[in-house]
Image (tube, rainbow, N blue to C red; front, side, top):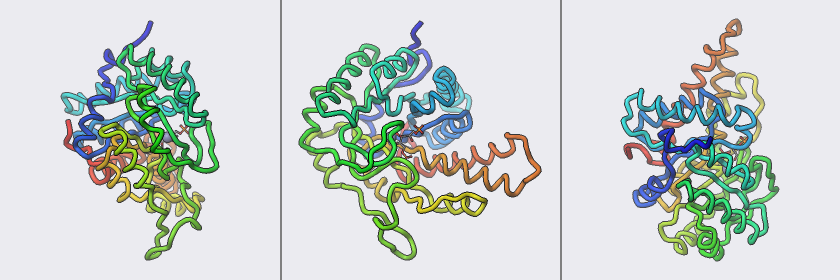
Length: 331
Ligand code: G3H
Ligand code: 13P
Ligand code: ZN
């Protein structure tokens, strides 16, 4: 028996993207794999009165089980209400769907939004696959994110050595022929905690500053597709205080460099209306756990170290919402 996202109290992205593009802010899209991440996301969204996209990758489904994650998202809506939010705006989104079958399975099982990532395919094949997913998804009022251009680094199980910026001359044809609801583009972001090598960066006041995102490409795309929702993947900023904590307490993260938050702030004011953040949550969780473990070597109850981990993630989510994306006070 199919489960509609509407029965779970979830919403699709259509209305929230329209408002975000008009209002010059971006909706946070936070990946989650565990109950603690879900709780931290909901607490942050409720406290800041922000709409939120909770996204599940194929890897997350393999780790936690799709049914469990869907029910966590259902719980998220009820939990948000319990925390005092009368009208939570929560999307359950499939991140980097790589086949029609996976997208269909999510659409049939409570997801309100899916991404079909055909970015590694030849252009016409990306169009054909995306169109097939859109036709199925729209029958159920599920929204679809597509991708054009290639990000460097790991995209779930897809790995690209270098990025290829999205070609602005292709976006109108792609969006029109596929009917997708939003488009992920490549302008210099990439996945993971090692987005740039130190050699690619400039040393400014002791801080490694990476090369700027290709805002010219973004603005050209905006001109070609006025008001169309644009998505940025790979948008963790890799906070250096978390990296430092991890290394201080036994970790070994070398040359971890992310996207400067000022650039994400600037992007949020444009047609970019969804910003994907996963690695920063992993860093916040790991830093808190490493610190707790080092300072409390005799403790072994997972609740003791998962509590500060959850608090640290919540703090990070609130910071992104309020100080970077500007999606607070929008409910
Ligand atoms: O885009 C990649 C996301 O960070 C998901 O990562 O496939 O390891 O869950 P994952
Ligand atoms: P980060 O690795 O920069 O957090 O990117 C996450 C992402 O794009 C998920 O799709
Ligand atoms: Zn991604």
